[in-house]
Length: 468
Ligand code: FAD
Ligand code: 2HG
Ligand code: ZN
Image (cartoon, rainbow, N blue to C red):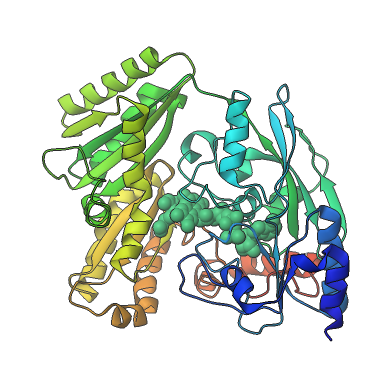
C-alpha cells in the first residue's frame, strides 16, 4: 500500500489519481513523441485548495512535482524525468473562466483554461485576447504563462508576460499566494508575478490569472507577399511599420522550402502564386476603424512595395476562408516538417536588423559541415524570432543526422551568440536546453537564477531537471 497515493486520493478523490500505465501514457510523452518520462501517478486536482493540499503531501513525502497544462511544450518541460519518483500535476480540470470585467478590460481564469476557449469567451463579449499560436486548441493559459509564450501577435501585443496583470500561485510549500490583482499600476515591492511567468513550473504552480483584454478590431486583413531575400522581407517590415503603425499585428516569414514541405504533406495548402519565390511574408492588419480603411492601408503598402520592387508578388485574402487558407500554410509548417521525418528545432532570436546576416552566415556554416542539409526557416520576423529548423540531407539516414544533433546545435547556437541573440526566444529551456544555456549565460546570471530557485524551492521539488 502506497500511503502517499492514498492520501492524494483522499485529498482530491480516487478517480483523479491516475496510476494505470495506459491512462498515464499521454501525460508522459512529449508533444513531438521523442521522449517518454515516468511517474508514480498523474494527479488531476479540481481547485486551488486541492493543488495546495497535494503540494503539501508531496513536500511531506519528498515527491517531485511536474506541473502540466496542455502538454504542447516543445522543450521537454512538461514531462517528468525517468526516475519514476515524480507525480505529474495536471491542471486540466481547472478550466473555469472566473470573471470578466468589461470596464477594467480583464478576464480572471483558472490556469487550466484552453487558450482557444479564452479567445472565444473574449470574442463573445466583443473583446480580443490577442495571444495566438498554433497549439491554441490544446495549450492552457497556465502553460502559456509558465513559458511566457510568444506566438503571432507579439509585435503588436507583446508576449504572454505583457498580457498578464495578476497571478494566483501555489508555492512549493503548499501555500496559496493570491496575487489576482487587475491593476495596471502597482509598485509595491518585488514583482513576484514576473518571477513566476516564464519559470516553467520550477518555482510554483500557477492556478489562476488575471489577463488583459483589448478592443476587438473592426476588421482583420491578411496578405501573402513574395520576395527574393530576407533583407527584402525586412525592408517590407520597415515600410509596414511606418505606414500601418499599430494596425500591423502579424508579420511571419516563411521560406520557399517551408511551403514546399507543406504542399507535399498537405496538397490542398499551396501558395497562390504562378511561380515560386525564395521568401514569403504573411502579413496581418487589424483595424479599429473599418474594413475599407484597413484595405486602403494594405493596398497602398503593397502597391508601393511592388513598385519599388521590394516584393515581386502579393495576394490579399478577400474572405475569412481565404485568410484562413493563408494562415493554414503558416500553421502547418511544424506538422509538415514532422511528417517529413526527424528534425532539429532552433527557436532563436537576434536583433531584427541582423536577421539577414545571421541566416546567410549560419546557412553557410551548416552547409559546409552537412552538404545538402535542408533549412526550414520560418517564424515571427517582426519579433526577430526565427524557427531556424533543419531537416537532414535527403541522402542521409535521419538517425545518423540526429546523432550529430549536438554538433548542429553548437554551430547554430554559437552563431546566435555571436549575433547577441537568444537560444530560446519563446519556447523556454525545459530539459532540452538546460545544459546548453550554461555556455551562453554569464556565471553571474546563472548564479542569481540559482539563488532564486534555492530561496523559493529549497527542497528542489518543483519540476526538477528543468531550466536550471
Ligand atoms: P505544457 O506543455 O503543459 O507546459 C509547458 C511548461 O510549463 C512546462 O515546463 C510545465 O511544467 C509548465 N507548466 C504548465 N502549466 C503550468 C502551471 N499551471 N503552473 C506552473 N507551470 C506550468 N510557443 C510559443 O511561444 N509560440 C508559438 O507560436 C508556439 N507555437 C506552437 C505550435 C505548436 C503546433 C506546438 C505543438 C507548440 C507551440 N508552442 C509555441 C509551444 C507551446 O505550445 C507553448 O509553449 C504553450 O504555451 C505551452 O502550453 P501548455 O499548456 O501546453 O503547457
Ligand atoms: C510556431 O511559431 C511555433 O509555429 C513552432 O513556435 C515552431 O515548429 C517549430 O519549431
Ligand atoms: Zn513560434
